Length: 352
Image 1 (cartoon, rainbow, N blue to C red):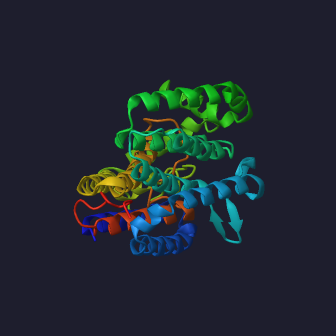
Image 2 (cartoon, rainbow, N blue to C red):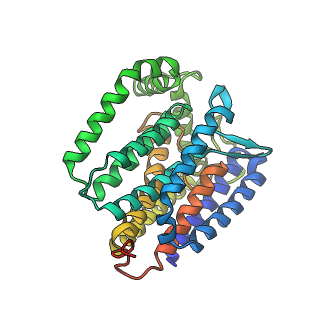
Image 3 (cartoon, rainbow, N blue to C red):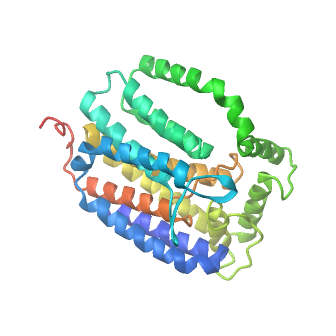
């Protein structure tokens, strides 16, 4: 077990408790329960053999696709979106599971087929996964899935000619429907126009830019050492979830924000070192899970400080939300299990 990976994950969860407690004290008890479930998911990921998970990766992806299709008919959510299954007080978002399922599948695919093989089938399943998320609608998560799959193909060494042809085919298939999609789901274009308003210094409470400006205000009010857990956080929509980084900085100060960034950097560096130590599908699995955690963190923090348009992507280990915490915990557990594998393992993972 890698103690650095474990400590980084635990400290990020602790920062999450503080951020949620400052933003929405009434949700702190529920968040504690979710953190406990994340520990259980981490233990499950640690106990399951990675090679066995890779062998069943295609079925895991099919299960995820079934859930993504089912949520379009039976799911619910605010504003008419269909992203969650609600089972009493418990809510589950299949698109969070899709991020890890896609990593497992692509690592398994390259491990079985090699990197210089036709990728049309794998790219098609990746596109279907992103497409089902896109029509929930969840544009940001769908784009994240496409980006994650593309990075994994590139880092696996898939030739550029294959990537270009598949990418061109995907673009030609999606482009004719882009106008209808943007007209049907105006929130996508509104987030971009809101970001442009922010860049021009124009924002009102009705614009998504208002959320970013309030987050920046909270960060500035935090100062070097923060206002503490009892500080009076300014009005900030989604302060416990999408904008939780601003809540953490408000409570712990700029120093605390730098610590959070350093913890994600540690996750990235340890995950990268782990991927370099292993080989074959296990190496790609370690790399994919590391990218899932740290790339999503980069997007979330980039939105909070105003570098990117509002996406709605949660901050791994920190944001309030059961699905994100569960999947992040499971991913960390798998990384901890991979850290126990001997150096160079993975070369003959599929020879038996």
